[in-house]
Image 1 (tube, rainbow, N blue to C red):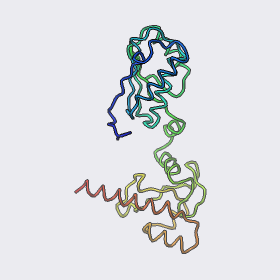
Image 2: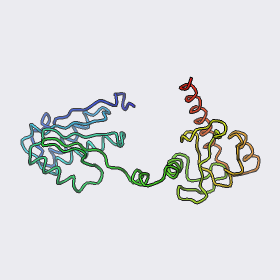
Image 3: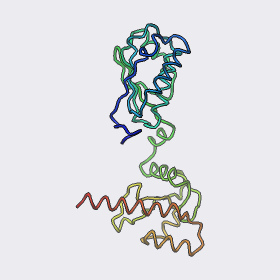
Image 4: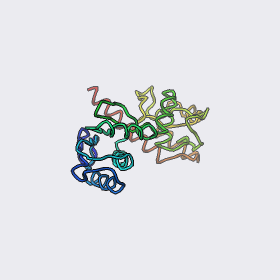
Length: 235
């Protein structure tokens, strides 16, 4: 994966002391945060060194860390913040702040270093307690909308009549991957049986059902691409 044209392994090494000697006043924190933003080029890891700073206070220091969190949002859980060369008072100050912050998690704490990762968002927390089938339903609803693609009946991962429908039927070698799945109500899934997705789409349209044609066509394209990739790998 690449972001901003750079390798996912790239690391931005940032020293606030190169711009300001202190992080004790609000404007010093703002200046350092702006300098960090100007230096950022899409790296997955931001490493911030506090070693040469003459003074650090919680507010300005956390302003810089929050800026790093904001910059790393596109990376999601793959982003990482390293706080290095921490003097004991600075480390204590940052840990006191991090105890009350929900959007980052301390995953490693050494004597002069802290490593932070973005905390799981609400959806990630929910997925962690769902069964594999319900987790797929949640992701499909997020991708295609909370409805049956064949009749537009409202569905969520909690719906008792919600099912996973294989675009390429399993009897024809279809996979259980998300690229081969859509949400369907139990009635539509049962009526379709082993019909091809293309022929069943045509039948639904002819019958006047409120079918989500765009979602089905996208799903067919994804399924074909996934199946072709699987065949090429097996060859």
